[in-house]
Length: 158
Length: 158
Image (cartoon, rainbow over all chains, first blue to last red; front, side):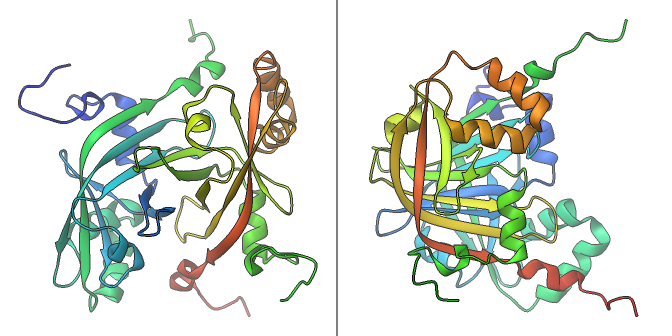
């Protein structure tokens, strides 16, 4: 699928495959990896919000990862199902950091997806006094691996 | 807790906390991060087996990550629950790579935990013609974050 309007990697261009769509809509945290200033790798679980063009990860101002992930950093993310058969989406990209006053709008959207609207509202209210920054990832590469399902393939009901 | 017999980070010394024990026994894949030769971060989901001293991750000979993760590499791992309230264990360490003829013994143990004994046997049989290498991580740092549960704390039944 070629989309002249988008520089997105093919796996992330619309229409998304059902497997990719399901992963981006699931309540699975992204696992975000970066390289610390000492050259060693780091990885953390973090909520994400897919905007259709960017992966937005909000974090609290002052977080260690914000000190280590600056604008133009290169990061890697995996979004993958926890149980067999595994389905996985990997994204690599470059970072812009956007500072917010209070919680990031993408954080509120993520909270609604991960927690449902009622608990998300209470969760965000409990954090509303804090400032966040958004790590906005522009994907430069993406790969999907949905091959695990083949092992469980059975004949469709006739 | 000080254990003069072990150089393990405190979080991984026996007796383990129930939260750490649960994560190491769960069917949650580790997410393994490393730094590629070009200096960029990488992250993949991968089965793990905790030996009590090392985190053993088996992978197939020829895998790209094996070309990029050599002996003495520094890697980072997160093992964390997928649903709220989140519980997470992070481990950083150095790598030894052990080549096996056929499947790695740690892979068979991991398969049994992740798939249960019956499916694991069939799964491993389907792969028995392949050689694996074990990425053996010696933890140099570990941290646990089990703080999410506080939000859901309710009074114990009286």
